[in-house]
Length: 398
Image (tube, rainbow, N blue to C red):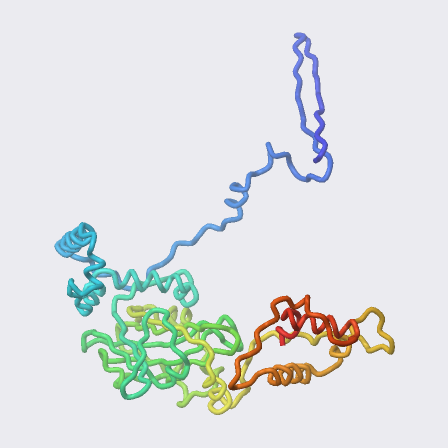
């Protein structure tokens, strides 16, 4: 511990009063101010903590639920809580459950808040809009058709493989016919040139109502292509409501657009430019990771090399071989300079010699160390046989 000394300062006045002041002096390995003067951990964390800027709501206000529906919901909730066997009766089928009614009730009561909460958890608003957010008020029904009988839907963060999302999705939402909309699909993950930018996978503008086929396709659809070794990418659909017809000629690309550089996208810059004319109203997203179709997409469609993110481990260093190695196991020393494939082949052939397809394997020795060797064997070979009997060592690793 550090040595602590006390210095005493005295001062005598005419009135013969003596004032004594003590000063603590710290010596040794401890540095800084004494604990009585130094800031506490809580005070230091408070100084380091940056003040959070207020978030800005750039979307529509969520429709309020009527008092009658709130009261009916509370009555139903109290009734279910009072029934202790409600969950058992529901699972057994005694209580009928209408999923369509449950979905309609969820869309009416808590849809906007639930989607906003999940999107905040996944960092959607932070990565796309910075300090802004919005509450989705238009439910999006998005699905990818795999074959005639199978399709996969986009919810809020579910995993969809690139092979399943290779074709343009089917998008449905309920709005008035005399309105105009913009639909953008982008990913904030995996831009190979600039990590601050995104990739735009689909851009439709001036959509009359929910008739996507009549909208203007600014950028054609491109399937997800997450890089190998990175993990999951987020693919986000945002539906904007337009106040008027807009000219997106600056974003329009030659189709098919197969150059990734031309698909560079920045959602925040796009919104700042058209914030007086568009308002985000719908949100849906899914996640995707690498599968073998991504390699074919890079080679055949994009005509480029596939980026692979992995760690290249350095080769194990083996010192040069000597004529007379001292205190080195004979067999292990020689195997160090052999091809590992030859060693694995040797162990495999040895295992196959002792296995018969129509006979049971021989039972293991009850006391392996008590079985003596039949003839004279060198020490290194005895150790090797003893390990094989006990099933120790490299035979298990190989």
